[in-house]
Length: 151
Image (cartoon, rainbow, N blue to C red):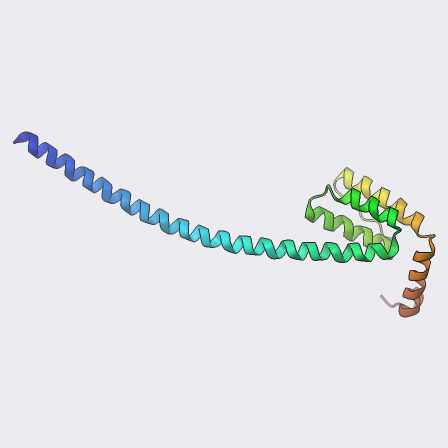
């Protein structure tokens, strides 16, 4: 009889442990479902951000093509292809700003500073081309001389 009571207590204890494990499993499944929903939302946000980043990159490259020769644009493409997408957009934006305003951007990383200096040399060489002068003339005709611009 003692054996049967020991076995019953053991069985009862194991059943209670099993109930606790089931409760933990149910909580874990709920947490997993919440995490899965959050991951789906994050993935959708990432897709939208990537699409916006790609669109921005295409627009900036299109504007740069108007000011640079084909050889210079190929060199720019070669420079930026190794950059992370966010850094690429930052560098392309600085390049466009330099072409339009002449303002040089400072970068935290030496490699980006070096690549930007290479770009500035390319842009300055291309500034004497017929393509750039004709585009600049059309821009001035549309906007007017810089003295007339208030801000």
